[in-house]
Amino acid sequence: MKHIKFNLCNLFVLFSFVLVYSSCDKLELQKDYDYKGEALDPHVDMTAWEFMNSRPDIFSIMKEAVEYAGMQEYYSQTDSLMTYLFINDTGMQTFINSRGGLVITHVDVEVVRKFLQYHIIRGEYHAYNKKLPVEPIYVKTMLKGEDGLLTIKVNKSSANSVGSPIANGNIVVNESASNFKSKRISSVTSNILPVNGAIHVFSDYAYYRKDANYTPAF
Image 1 (tube, rainbow, N blue to C red):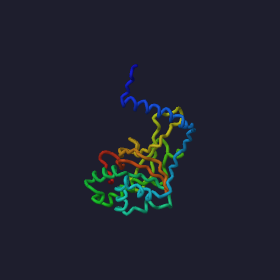
Image 2: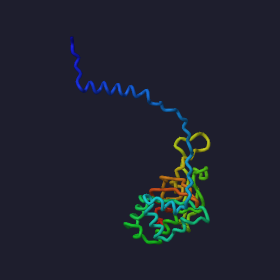
Image 3: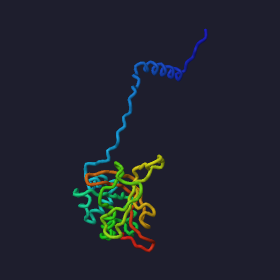
Image 4: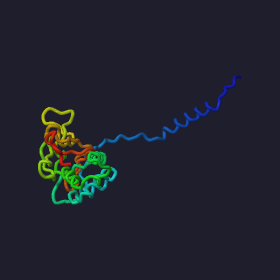
């Protein structure tokens, strides 16, 4: 009579197989559910100033700049709708470095004030409900005079259909050749709608420049 020999490893594998197989009968199969997508609501129940304060991880330097310039009221007012171009910490640090400083308080306060005024547009401009065209348009900023000239548009989708262009929601300020030699910036987040207008977020800052010999205001 032959003796069948099992080592401990073989016994463990056999036992595991039996255990898993017997457990399968007790498992309920996953039910199929229809996926129901919902459009994201861009509205936030707060002012632009409150939104800025709610994200210190992104806008800590801009918040400091607003307080340094004494311009909190521009962002907290609710008498009229404004379009706020928020610059994140990366873009704000680039601005500070361009002025030869390390922190925002190293920059002249009047320069900071002009910088912030240029990044606030009178009126509400965003891509929600197709309110912004795909071709650049001139808008009025809070910065008076020629230095306040700025263009804005919403980008076309890279895959356009025949007929009207499709907007992808990305906001571009000072599209190349649309506003002389002004600095072009493109949003990293866009179409946030606080109670007092619209917010678009950028990782760089913009300024007006007429030609190579023109010195920007900030």
